[in-house]
Length: 256
Length: 344
Image (cartoon, rainbow over all chains, first blue to last red; front, top):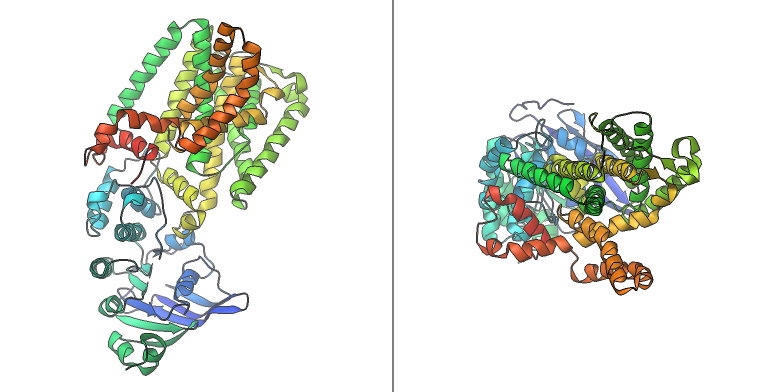
């Protein structure tokens, strides 16, 4: 078990190389490479079907890639189960939030915290954990007032925030966000972007964020990788991405 | 658990036990039957209602409990020890039955449990030294904590006590990480896995804990009947228990108890009506029919079960008050109300 290493600022924590996955004859991700350092928000953009979510699914254990490596603080991540990854400090959120009928917002946050030792036992009092989760996560995510409300009854934006709270409750060092603002109003989206930056500032974790909303991506990410047809076609600062001719052509649309 | 809830549970226990001791023989017999069925239904509700694993092997698991507790009791073990032993053995067998669930889902797994039920029924007949074969195992009622269980009233009180302990333990369990994981596994294994839950381990626990409780209930059935025989623990019994949790309301904790009372008392009521109007033979034939019809009607009109009627009848006012359900002290009631009822 890797102890949560206090990664040095600027040190590369995640190094993914040559990640490749095929579904039958379709090569969904072909030789994808991506780095992330602690405290950095990396945006992953690209047209539909570029393989962004599939790449994230490879990193976080949903899919088993055919080739490639993804080293996290020197440990190979590919092939590990999401359960094992969570113990290593790798958490993710989902594009579509699952319907979990009877669970409340606080329940789902506690489930996220379940990887931490000493929580949620049969005789354990959860008052302290509840107070901590409410203060550190639910309040910043504007969920404190609905802590005891079943997820199912909440509007979409708040369900996504609850999913983020669940991922953060595990105190991850690498956070993978799959379209965190998709389906939100632009106001909610900007609020979510602010929360993501706040999370990075407070926890110092590395964040990889798949997203389509360009205003959010440009204002949130420190670095952006552009995927098309399963591989990376460009990587650079947000302003560089906007001015790159190839990215313009495949993704942002032909000028004029 | 709050102290207030614990005190309330103790008070309810004391009242119910006192009442059981004051009942006539027939009343005690009914209370015991409902209490034991309630324990078995709580066990199955954990597995089906909370973890989403459909099992048709509950009847056979109750049988395992009855045979193990019976043998331990006959060998001179204290009743408490015999019940714990029955629970442990049945937990192991329950976990074994759950193994295919690591690969199979939904109906496919349910079919696998049908096979388990058939195999266990066969073993009940074949393992003669342990089960007494086709003629069954005669069971002596053991003493509990050294105190003899001299009458049906006392054994009813014991059953009620075990029911309350089980109820407290299982409702507490659903407020642990494991209990919450059950709910996520029930909704979607893919989501559970993606969230980083250990799905295999979660299911294994569901089968083991449900099995343990089934074993205890089976042990009580054996002590009450003074006999464990293969024909008492057939697929019919499994079906009865599935009926209980459906009629009562899947995934609530009041449901299994309401359902158990309904399923146990309905035949008695039909019998009484039959005797009163001298049409007992006709009605006993209709019993199965009425039973099946009721379950279908419940699935159509009240899929959340009888227990969902209770909060609607009594807590309607409270639920409509904004914020009433968010206070922490109200959680017990609110949880039932939310589960039981309409959602927006």
